[in-house]
Amino acid sequence: MLSKISYMALAQIFFAFTSVVSILVLPKLLSLESFGYYQLFIFFANYVELLHFGLSDGIYLRYGGRRFESILKRTLKSQIYAMEILYALECLIIFFAVYTFSFDKRLFLYIAISGAITVPRSFLYNLLQSINEIKKSIVVLLIERIFVLSSIAIVYFVDFDKARFLIFSFIFARFISFAYICFLCRDVFKAKTTPFVKSLFYIFKNMRIGIRLTISTLCNIFLIFIARSMIAWKFSVIVFGKISLVLSLLNFALFFINAFSAILFPILRNKSANEQNEIFKILDDGLSAIFIFLFLFAYPMQILLALWLPKYADALHYMPIIFAIFLCEGKTLLLTNSYFKALRKERQMLRVNLIILTLFSIFIMLAVVVSDDLFIIMFCLFLSLFLKYVALSRELAKFINSVNFYNIGTDFFCSVCFVFLSRAAGEAYSFCLAAAMFIFLFALKRKNLIRLFRFANTAEFK
Image (cartoon, rainbow, N blue to C red; front, side, top):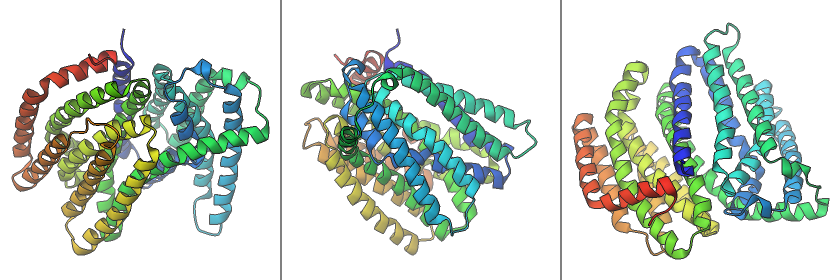
């Protein structure tokens, strides 16, 4: 029988396929204007769920590792209704605040409708993940992705507005997945509603718990957003579009990692301090070797994407930096963030994220003003994200004793060598370097790699 981690891995392969189709096929099917319109909708639709002001994240943190039977369901029902009312008020305030500006009001309506479905769906989805109902949460996403993939196949034969057809299909897919997750959590809706005053107490309690995690998530989003905005300001829209493609590939890969982080969190909540330390050592050693192994795919991916999308070929030369960012951000999401949440140290995580965001904003602005070299700007993004990884690891070392700064130094050395050899000598040489580094790390850490695969298969590490 497959473990939850193995089940998630198989599901993520399918999700990866749908994401690749969306990123690489839609630019071929849509005009530049239609693709931009659809991407704008997707951008806001994916982030509108953050308007819960920490309520969903509070549920995720508070109930992590608990059983569904032990949760007071009537309080959840009241919070879902209150969250929908709050979201409706937020939409009205935003609409009237920007009404005098020139914007597409229909697009705003599409985003608002999508959000009305996404916000409560996010609440219930986080609930399923926090109580370790991973397989059920995967099916929810699977239903949505199947509908989205079907709409992409159909759009080839559509003669009318393809962008709006995809938007309607996206909203419909979200609605179907929301209906299914409501069915899974039907006991919540069958429960009696908590009195209004009492429900407010639970709402503010969960918001107070979750808002730190929500703001930390926003800090991560803003790091990439600021870099993209500075590139758009300094260079042309065409350059911005090309860089956005490779950053979209990065976001997709990080979404993949974040899914495994969601599994790890409830597992860690039910482990002792000694077991948490042991799991950290296994993951830290094993993930370093795995991410270095993934460096081998940078050069082949660059060649294949250049053949498929020749207009973006020059931007694909930054693929080594994207893979280096993937290493530090991947370990940040899977290791440090998971442990901060499991140890309930969101305040410390938020403080580090805010400091790094402030420093990065100054750093990237100086880089953009001083340099006209896009490579330097992208490398500054990598340095800032790696600095965040180091700072979070240093803070985490106060609470667990298995943080290995030697591993962090190895990760940085391998990443920098890979990026600069690719820049100076070419991608073929960096490919050979990545192969040599992986062989060395595999020989050095093979025992923990074996233990990592055993942990992935059974969720046990002995």
